[in-house]
Amino acid sequence: MNQAGAPLAVVDLDLQAPGPGEVRVRVNAAGICHSDYHYMVQDLACRTPIVLGHEGAGIVQEVGAGVTHVRPGDKVILTWRPSCGRCEYCTSGSPALCRLGAVHATHNELLRGGTRLSHDGQPVHHLMGVSCYAEECVVSGESVIKIPQEVPVAVAAIIGCAVITGMGVVLNGMGGPAGESVLIVGAGGVGLSAVIGAAAVGAYPVIVADIDDEKLAKARELGATHTINTREHDLAASVHEITGGGAHWAVEAIGRPQTIREAVVALRPRGTAFVVGLSNAEAEINVPLNQVVQQEKSVRGSLYGSSNLSVQIPQILDMYLAGRLPLDALIGEKFSLAQINEAFDSLTNGNIGRSVVLMDSN
Image 1 (cartoon, rainbow, N blue to C red):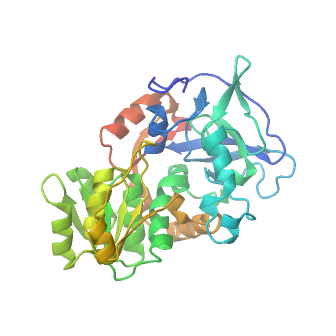
Image 2 (cartoon, rainbow, N blue to C red):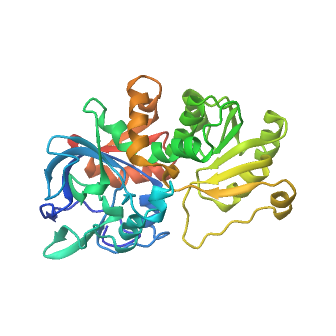
């Protein structure tokens, strides 16, 4: 991306060899996520020119000095929120908030400084330390997790953001709400991943709200017990009717102030709404004060599913390979890298499931 608001361009760049602590990866697949779109339209700021893409998987080609946890030939998931294992957030159980992630987000460089990408001698930046809308990328060693070879590349790619974010908020934020009601607002890739997580742990009912009947049908396929088209029905009234008093838990996976408010109103007393969707950096939320006080409702953010990636990604993969998670059904349209702008057009026009770019289809 050369500048916000312009179409993405597929061009040849120079890629340096990995330095100490870094890894070069041949990208097999990358997911199409709204977070990249927020950077494209300048809802979120980044340094340009920049290679987008933060949700991907591929094969290690080369490792820099000091890298011992992966080697050439390993299949890996790329992660955009690395953890150091030493700071107060890592040691207190919140590695998604590690200070290393802020380095990627604010500088658009790798952890050890600088960029490994250039065009005509000029530096090109890394989005979230990943930049996987590319045939190859060099990333910090902390940004790769080795996975079994038999995991399909499209599934591996979406686990790195959508799946771990949606499932993580259910497993970590809610603590595995077996027998409790869960409302999920927004049936995109993250929302549908939350559906899969809620169904896997035995939540009931699992209620999904969206304005698109096809997305709601996909939610039912993945484990939703009830769906609400909010073009036709009032969200809070419908949830209170289904649950007999409001949802124990809610996940807002869109990032809209109005739907966050509606999710809070749909809660029962002492219920908690988790916000996982991003929006414009200036966006604010407005929730009913008296409900928060008199009914002890809570609103919480959840970054990357509040997950410990090095532990939970392998757990999710074990469940998937055992046939207990329908992640293949979460995959939506497939595009080549040359079709990257078409992929984002599909995203903004309401595509079903999580679309992916397959590099080998070029």
